[in-house]
Image (cartoon, rainbow, N blue to C red; front, side):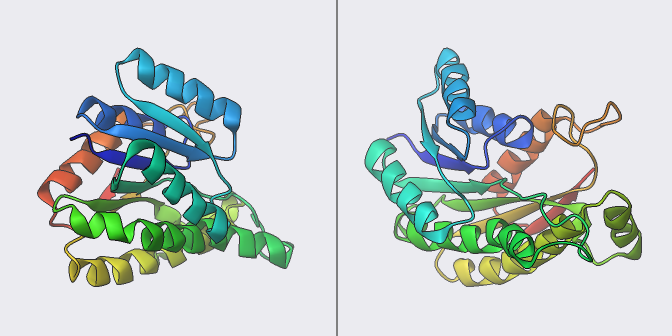
Length: 229
């Protein structure tokens, strides 16, 4: 019986590579993001590789929409085996000038959306001995003065704050989900990924290598948080 992965925050880069990797390993793939056009193109690309896929346009910062997404994926592709979260918000770049709603929005995508997805998918995840929650995070979320300085320099303070909150959420959920037989693996990416919005020609990380690392985490089911890059 085919397993199903939901890739939340689909776009060029890590999420695309993860969808292709897990699809090649036999998973049906649900793609979720705001852009219907982007999702449609992603589904066609996966289907061209012989991978079963479907698109689910969703506001990943809205918990009600996220829960509806999981329910819709379950109905369309079957029980969820893997939840993969790559969604992020670049809002509130300068925290001294940012509107409170922008800060709230960045945190919603990084934490509230993740939590809503896990809660809604949990009945499926608990029934699958190889289930997993796989989270993409970024180095800006580390408690490190150099990372803080870089986040300020690149006007990514809101992203850094959201990543830090997501890092703590991953630690908490990893411990809690462990008691239910569900694995959580967080991959902290320390660098720029080729082909993404952050790539200004200096990126050094290959999205496919990150997807391979996610597959290794999923297969080994040991480390709850690792860095890459």
